[in-house]
Structures are given as C-alpha cells and as structure tokens.
Length: 123
Image (tube, rainbow, N blue to C red):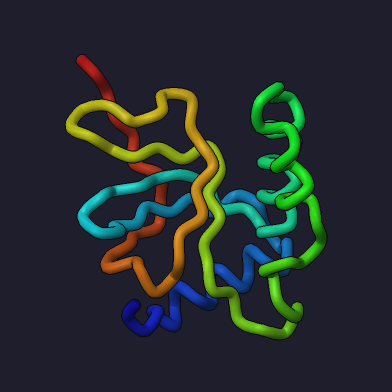
C-alpha cells in the first residue's frame, strides 16, 4: 500500500465530519476507474446493513456493518478509507452496476483521482 495523498485524505476527513454529503469523486484503483459520491463511514455502514437485512441469505451479516466503530477508529484519527455510494466501475462506455453500488476503498490504494462523477453512455 502506498502513502495516501494528503489532499485526498483531507477531502475524506471533511466528508467524515459530515460537513457535506455531496462530494463526487472519481478514483483509479489497480487500473479500475470508480466514480460516485462519498459518504461518511457511519452512513455507509448503515446503508449496507439495511441492504443486507433485506436479504434472506445475507441478513446475518448486517450486524457486522451496524456495529458501531469496529473499524472506524477514533474520531480524531485520519480516515483510512473512502466510502462510496451510488458508485460505478467504469468499463468502456458503461458503468457497473448501472444503478450504482457501495464501495469501500483504502486511501493508500488510490493511484489517481479527480473531483467529479464521470458520466457514461452506452450509445
């Protein structure tokens, strides 16, 4: 894992402080381009837990995500991950999944990034 970009870490910290939930970001991780909106880890965990609770097979895993702070660390600690919602992996002219997904990405794995959510088209 590389040393995370300080500016990207500052953006993540601002999102974690819940000052905004409108930060769109596009990152490159191991050659994959992922684009979407950042969420605070607490909000991201809640949403993942809700989705898991609705699944017959995956329901028991909801507790792992709803447990407060198992990996979140102390509030004063710098963020170690980006938490995306409504995110897509860009593959050619399409985004996968089309409706957006929930991704957790280690800051140290990001090799490039830009502000904004890239659009895509299958036309």
